[in-house]
Amino acid sequence: MQMLSLEKELKENAYPGRGIVIGKSPNGKYAVTAYFIMGRSENSRNRVFVEDGDGIRTQAFDPSKLSDPSLIIYAPVRVLGNKTIVTNGDQTDTIYELMDKQQTFEQALRTREFEPDGPNYTPRISGIMHVENGEYNYAMSILKSNNGNPDACNRYTFAYSNPVAGEGHFIHTYMCDGNPLPSFEGEPKLVEMSDDMDSFTNMLWESLNEDNKVSLFVRYIDIATGETKSTIVNKNK
Image (tube, rainbow, N blue to C red):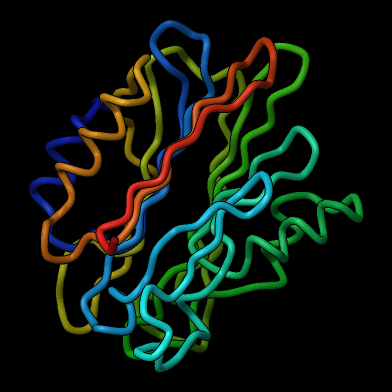
């Protein structure tokens, strides 16, 4: 698979929707993840990321403008022991709760399907990072309608053991802007990573469409120690 420029992928797509990046820094020291949200409606754009324990949650920037919290207020990032869960919806909680009961990432997601927001039927994208005793692996998932048919849910899981330094994978909800919005297709895109969290964060934020971007979260986990560094960027301030 050809390695793509994440910067180019984002700059050339006005509306990838919500996106998850997971990989390993080029120096091999860090497990890296990023999650961003975008919005076209006032309700979707009226959000910020806020810290919530070891993770984050979305919150209405102006509570008086919040019209429907069902698909936009959730915890995108939660930590369960040595596992970091990153998703684009309340399936974060499903994964957390069922893995806490010894079920697997895949088993937990079999209980869920795409979002009930026809005609888009937005895919649920999820990722999990496992960092323990200097070892690191991750997996990504997408639950999507069968080519826009809401009667069938297609579930795909991609697992990456012993990730290669400098490589990451990028999955997002929509191929591009449209009406209805076309769901992401294929396996997660192979993209380059960075050793420096600040420059990686700046590159992502500056590459997202100015009108549609809402919030960005980036976390670097030291694979040897488990120590984390995180940053949040919100358009609404």
